[in-house]
Amino acid sequence: MAGLVLRPMARQDLPAVLALQALGYPAALHDSADAFLSRMALAAELNLTAWRGEDLAGYLVSHPWAAGSPPPVDAVLAPATPADCWYVHDLSVAQDARGLGLGKILLAAGREAAMARGLSRSELIAVDGAAPFWRRQGWAAPAAIAPDLALKVAGYGPAAVFMTREDLANP
Image (cartoon, rainbow, N blue to C red; front, side, top):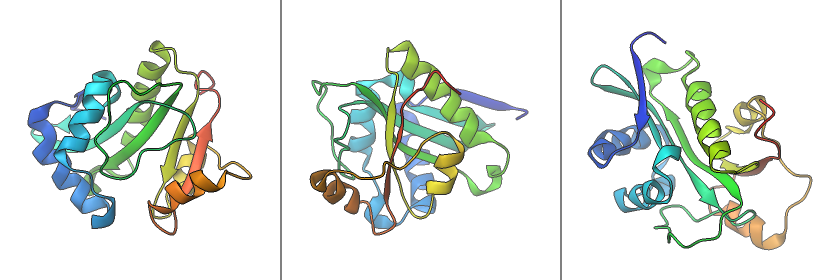
């Protein structure tokens, strides 16, 4: 994408990030600035923004985390949490940047950074019918999940789907 600048998310980006989040997700799935800051503190290189000039075109919020234990919406995360997977918390692309492959660009950069941290697998919760997009990117829904995990996933809404990617090295 011509004129695209990808960089780690910074505190001063949060007003634009929160505005884009508000456009793309229902209010029940909104994270606060504090929740974003806690994820940035866990792994700055796994939280990315994509800019076209002065406009935020998209962002990726992700972090190292314990497998099978997705954090609830709007949780402020503790830095001492054991981590064995790359948890993709949020991927958002502005309406005028959709269809240009920006989601793939952000995910590829995040995946590389996760592998550089020694993480080889990933988890996420697909919301609002996004599971087909995530399948195309290499994530899959397990055949069954534990009841406590199913309860956490339900906190993301009725259409939420827990998904995993077992091999980050295989694009």
